Length: 436
Ligand SMILES: [Zn+2]
Image (tube, rainbow, N blue to C red; front, top):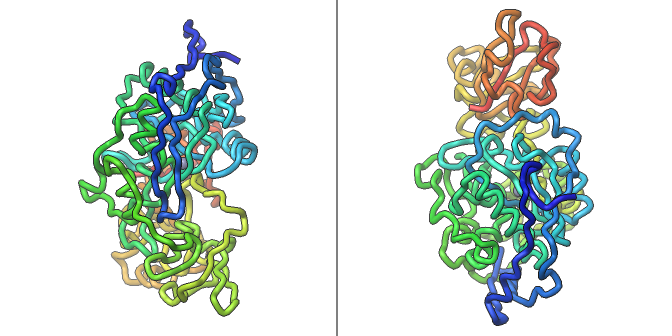
């Protein structure tokens, strides 16, 4: 156990009892998330944590050694686990989904070496750059997007951020929340790529929370919405993230019940059509997400349940979608991008084509109209080419050859991620697909 980020580091850092400096108790009440949550940002006494050393321990993921070194570090992305300590830690460590993990006690764990890539942001974009994992450090804080964190977490996170900011020369405007950078692919509810896929970490956009973490207010606007690369799909989240003193309008609606302004996507986000998402209709019928066909016909009063608990599966990697499993039509899977050059189809018979190629020939266009079950789709990818004896993976895919976001399709049809591939044993005629 040590108290610094670097093995080379020599300083000992101690927590700062910053709330004491404020000299008085102060409450900031904010109605959160459709008005049903109420947050108390209590600037309470934190004598219990005063003077406690800042401690970081190594709890490296088994995937740590396989992860490539990140070429650039521009951002720090803050997450809330949306689940309890134990369950969250096990999953994040197993899959290498953060660089740091901040426990409720204020203890900080290293999961992935800060120089390497952790898969924490999933489908993400900021300032036109996508796959923010490749440019950022991810910090998971045990807690929920709409609840305050513990005093000990404030103290630890403030010190962790201070060290990382100085080490990487990152300005406060580049300390972002996962909810700011995540974006959704087109779906039944939103025909365009959209912001609002996640509410993860949104409390870290609150100016009072940021102040307590030693941060100035976050970005004033969403750069990708301003540039029309994305549309806003969750206006309440957008207001919360970008208003100087964000407060949600109060409303007395149950957040898990479908009503006039609350459709299935608003409740379940990308889990809306999942078999583990169950819709209990007012007449008592129960339908699973994958059994619903008429998404506009779900009656008001229908209750939504998640059979696997309410853990937000925010870290689910942006991988393959499948006809029959994720939707029945190419539009359901890829939205308006279904015939785009960056949408790639893998048919069960082995045919691999981009949407644009499919759309050029009448016979292939017909396959887009009724794709066979099991057809897999990648959205937002480019085809890099074949691996050949004289053209190794790093020549095809460049520095992203071993990124977790890069996919390899082997001649036998198997698909592997970049961090699963052994570059000494890639068969000839393996195809490589990189995020655009
Ligand atoms: Zn997150």
